[in-house]
Image (cartoon, rainbow, N blue to C red; front, side, top):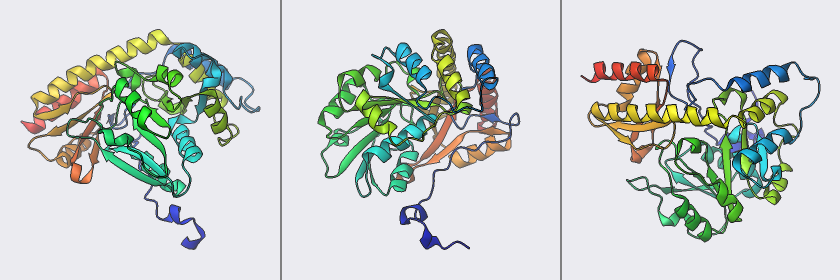
Length: 353
């Protein structure tokens, strides 16, 4: 047996991030990890096929420049030097924590939010500090209070699990008060009414992360990116893996960024289903938080959430049961197709009646 003393203390003390359950394909209605229920654009599939027939014996472009050019054009950025590509936005978040927060230094995050943030701080041997949302899922001004050794603030927007947003104007106020970079994690921004991409151009300490896993339906290729000032991109590029994005994922992501019409229509469908699902859940006795993402956060007023979760799982439906201690628990339900949502609502109606 390997001696535990061989590992860094930060590693042995680590609980580790636990992702949502991934069952065998085709056996479950899977609404637990906020995946897009629809396949990606045909152009993306064609790009993947073409890349697979290419020179896979050669290393890919280490900076994914074709993608960076396409992303800059799609998002109205001055040029590709404002974009850093990564193996999913989780790698981008890892680079940000690694690049800005040293051992013993402080990372600030809201609560409840994406639990991976805490894991990344723990791996780094850094200190994470939580500022709780209020009962209306509003972020207190204290999120931007000065603090010794505060090196980075992470803000998911829209937030998970709530699906709520902090307005652009408040984000500007927070950034103006913070003495460190403010990272706006926009994994779900395409399902919201506004985003913060343009704020990166206007404010030195605002950075934005994005993923292709949600709105583009590409969770399987693992591709995300950072939008930041060129000097930030250049510095963080020093600590990424030499070839962090493979040739197939670069081709897929590049093609996806050119499919603006598909993106708009896909988001429209998901938002329409999200609205209908929220209304029907409220009829079944759930308190549903208004969502700006591709999922809803809901709590039932009489039935234990663990019981509902276990019932749905017994019927081969997966949702996410999330427990935040004193802040309580609830169910985060991803928006599926209309047929999947109808099936879940029918099961819930029969169970709760």
